Length: 287
Image (cartoon, rainbow, N blue to C red; front, side):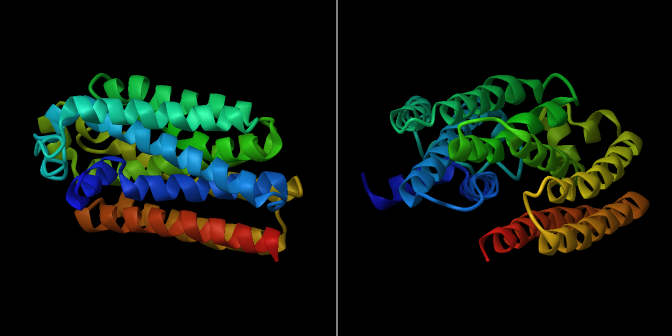
């Protein structure tokens, strides 16, 4: 197998999403565990959660390979371009998912293994087909999108406690403005491909704009709740408020003007918000 083939399989794992999943899982592990007391366990947990994310991404690519060929933003992916055989991609995705669960089980992280499998199931077999059936796919897809951070919590503590619920809620709320910005930017392509995104079924965007503001405000409120439970301290509180206000203001500007530029700015803000929030949380807990 040459380097180009390896690169193709790696790109099937959606590296950008994979990196974000591993960062969120690491954040969940450290916050729930109050730090890292066993680096071997920590590294295995994050590696396995990332592996499962990659497997789910490959399976998503497999199921949507024909539709991906219809949209400008996805037509150059490996499967539409036939750079990777579809059956081999299917086997690769299943193997990654099963290996990640098996390794978590072998290292006594049973709840994390269950959550990883549940995440993959919801993402591949529930969210992916729902994109062609109902605009609610974004809210439903936010469930598997939010679970990796809870997988990190479960790996650290062996339970699904208040930390896992609160961090899941943060991720769940964050995904709505993030994906609605993408849906608005590419609404014509989504419609052409037959996806029932909210930006497609609600062409004037009224409901989409309401949800952007609603979830931005919910995110601001929920992001500070971990402080009340002693999970993080004042540094995180200040960071969460500043970042939350910034994110909300960018969302309001998008709702007022709803241009492509404003949608792109909201997308950029969402990408800045999450790593910045995690960075403040890491520093607060570890320093």
